Length: 490
Image (cartoon, rainbow, N blue to C red; front, top):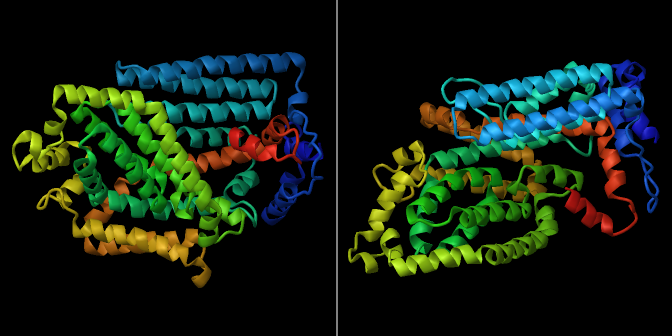
C-alpha cells in the first residue's frame, strides 16, 4: 500500500519527495529501492486501486469515465477510417481531428477530475490503436498517425499535463543498475543498420527467390520452406527485420501463384517471432532479459535454447493443424488445373529448360524486390552479389562476437552497436550514396515506437497500474501458477 501511495502520487504531486529533491541520482536510488523492495513469498500483495483515483468527487469520476467512453467511440471511428478504401486525405483529416479531440477532452477531464491512471490508460490505447490502424495522407507529405508519431505525442501529452515528470522520463529510458532500457534502443540501432544494409543489398530477396524456385513445386513445400527460412533468419537477425523483408515477397508470391496468402504469411510470422527467443540477437528485448538475469550470450542460449526449439516445433505442428484445409484446397485446385508446374517454372511441365529461369526473371521484378537489390543484381539476376555476401558476413560476425562475450567482456548491445557503426563507415567509404540509401530506408518509426512505449510502461508503473494488474492477475505469488499466469497476461 505504501508503494502505491508513493508511486501513485498524481493527486498530491507537490508532496512528492522525488520531485522535491530534483536530484537525478537520488531519484534513481529511490526508484531502485522501490523496485527491489523485498516481499514475503507466498503472501498476496495488497495493492488497492491507485490512490489518485480516490481524490476526485464521485461526480468527477463519473464524468471522467463518460469521457473515456467517448474516447472509445472516437478510436473505433479512427479504425473504421483506416480500413476504408475511400479518399486517404479525407480519412487522414478525420482521424487527425478525432485524435486531437481525444487529447483535448482528456486534458479537460484531467483538469476537472484528475485520475492519472485513467489518463495513462487512454494514452496507451491511443498509441496501440494508431499502431495497428495507421492513417496517412496519400496526397500531401503530412506526418502519418502511426506507431512513429502517436506514442511520442502521448508521452508529450503526459509530460505537458504533469502526469509524468522529467525525472520519471529519464528513469524510463535510463533504468536501474539491473535493467537499462536504453541498451535495447542502442542495440536496435546497430542491428537495424546491419539488417537494412543486408536487405538493400538484395541478399534476402535473392535468398527468398531461391527458396521459392527450389521448394515451390507444391503449396506444402512452399509453406514449410517459408517457415524454416524465416525461423533460420530470425535466429541471427532481429525478427522485425525478417518480417518486414519477407512479407511483401510472400504476398506477391501468393498473388502470382494464385495461393491463399494467410497460411503463408502466418507461417512466416509465427516462425520469425517464436524462434527469435533462442538467442540474444533474435530480438532486441532479449537484451533486457539477459541483462536482468546476468546472462551471457552462451548462457542465454543454454537457458532459452530448449524452450525455443520446443516452442518452434510446436508452432510448426499448430500451423499445419490450422492451415491444412486451406493449403490442401489450393493444392487440389492446382492439380486439377494442371498449372502449378507452369506457374512455378517447372521444366517438366512447361517443356522448356528455360522454365526455372523465367520464374527467376519474373520474380526478380515482381516478388517485392528492392531497388537496391535489383541494381545490385542487375548484371547477374538470381545470383548472390559480393555486396550481399559481405553484408551477410557482417551479420554473422556480429553474432559470433556476441557469442564470445565471456572472452572479450563486452556486452551484447555494445558489440552490435560497434559493428553497426563500423559497417556504416565502411559503406560510406565504398559508396557514400549507398550508405545514405540504407539510412533512408531504415525503419526509423520503430525507434520512436520503442522509445515511446518504454516511457508509457514507466507511466503505468508510477500511476499504480502495473501493481494493480499484478494484484488482479497474480493472487498467489508463492504458487507455480504464477509462471503460467504471467505468461498468458504478457
